[in-house]
Image (cartoon, one colour):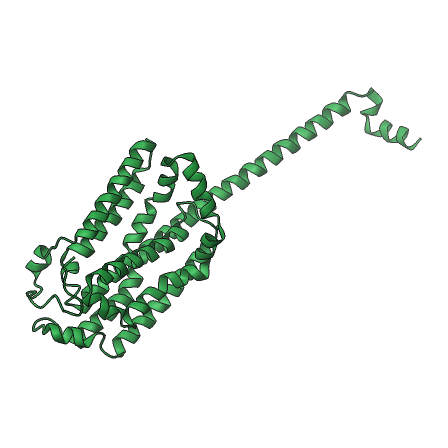
Length: 323
């Protein structure tokens, strides 16, 4: 991450963003690289220790780490302090794309399988506690997902992120964590404090779509965001400040909805699998009940045949019963 003094723009010398710069404008975001390397190493060590782990989860987790590197070290990260739309792409990806892939890697399940039993028991108690259940309540999860973009773009925090690299890094970490909490509780590959129906996840996704539209319209039609900062940069190439902000509003609105499509697809796939599993369980229970009923009938017939000959004759049995 490029560093600079507080309240001092740091992107004045960046050249115009061309096709060539899209491919070559990479930077070393040290905190992001260190975080990705550490998480990747720990994940691989845990997979080796477990011995048997689905390859799809490994691919998903490292896809999330690769996404983090792209949005922080590629031209998106290089120009996130110069172009409004570049930062909008970054925020949307950190909130809606990278956390989904990380959650599909089931890192918490892998963690529980590798830590000592005492530590695992303590983590389970924390995961079942009141704080965890409150944090994962559907309404709270919805707020965790939709509130961060509003706070970032509609408060002075946005300009502070542009001017202070430490604040910028912390905000990105919070956005990533908010997205992970959401997808962790909705995908439910890892153990969660509460079991909500898939329909709840659908409603939360629809709510997120609505709030994306509201935020996009507010930024599109509202005043310029951080105009003093962008005017101080004195960028002479690319779209002007208003067009740049309109493009960014479209990214936050439409891009956020498009970024959520993989999650919706994964949600319906898991929903279908759960329905098939429950259907098989019900079929197995019905088959067991039918088999038990058949055994009861056979046992009754055998008991009836074991009596005297006249007791098995319907006419004689009824006559002796009346007498």
